[in-house]
Length: 354
Image 1 (cartoon, rainbow, N blue to C red):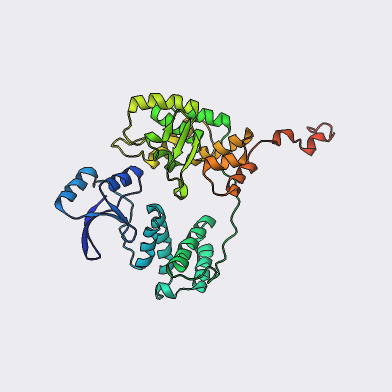
Image 2: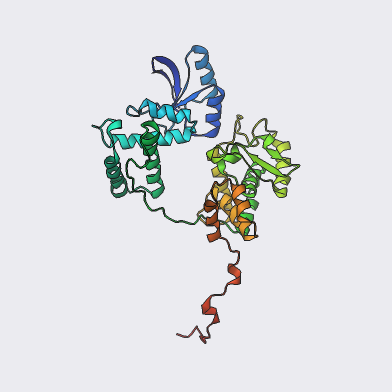
């Protein structure tokens, strides 16, 4: 990482490019830093005391892949509205990065002069030349729509964006036996507690590492998720078996604020959490190509296998629409074991003959 003096809007700041790591971001917030999506830097008030504090808290010998490129084409109104609407730093960074690529595709055009024809041509470029995925293409579209409709105030439908047909891909899930193998391969108490809670409560990685001690209610056996995806709060299940591991974990590690904290305090790193899962997957002998998020998919699928009402699963996962939850009906084995293939009812004789 690099500490540099920044002048922005005629004011001086200390600027740091911090790689996205929840513990580092938390530390930046504690030091009253402010993310600037235009500069792609965290800004801190200038001054000698601030510099000393920053040098104490951050290791500037660490190299980072975070670019120092300044965005010169993003309209100030675009950034300001994203911030006023309290979009997360991740979303702001994604929107500004994608929208900037759209603007740079038309270097001679002012942003406000771009229209539906430019968007259509840019989509053709993304699909044919860049070969971006459907999800990436949709992200580009959303970033552009935000400018046209929210910043410029154009009516919806002012321009015609041909959204790609969304690919239908089933989420990758683990069987119950595979979950057991993965959990039993973890011997570090903290790591086991994290993975057990992630699976048993159907948590996203960000939700797990941002849990505070007060979010665990062992009396009502509930986990309170604060500010989940879409900044929604929800309540999910606290497993008895997960609690059996959480209690000795808590006594051993004594977290201060967050349920799972990094070595220097603050929430545990999301990157480190994913590495914990991948290491457990490798040690378990399970050879499926799955990710930490597959534990959440497995949670929902296993609930459905056991006959849990779809509406309850929707609430536990925090989905706005039941259609999002219905994808698990395509994976669940419920009812399939009662269906017999028509081939099995045919009298074909000896099938092993050459």
